[in-house]
Length: 105
Ligand code: FES
View 1: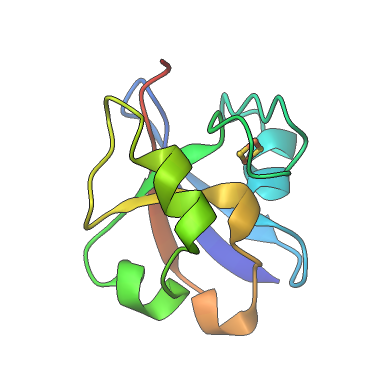
View 2 (view 1 turned 90 degrees about the horizontal axis):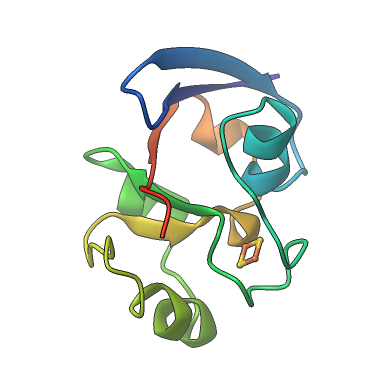
């Protein structure tokens, strides 16, 4: 299992154990972190938006052009931290990942 450290919208911190090869969105949604994921992971709704903590953006990998277009339309978009979590696959390389759930829009 992969450890993911999550800060929710109330500033509370959670440690979640995630199964590799699932999307980060599914992990956060199933843990009731307030992720709506209205489009079900199709990169079409942006309700799975999170902000990655320092150092993780590069390790996770760059967003695709489609993801970036969608995320950039959000008020809380941060070029150096924003990711749509349905586009991130959990893997052992992400053990210890730290994310903050973005504000609801
Ligand atoms: S779940 Fe809709 S964009 Fe990620």
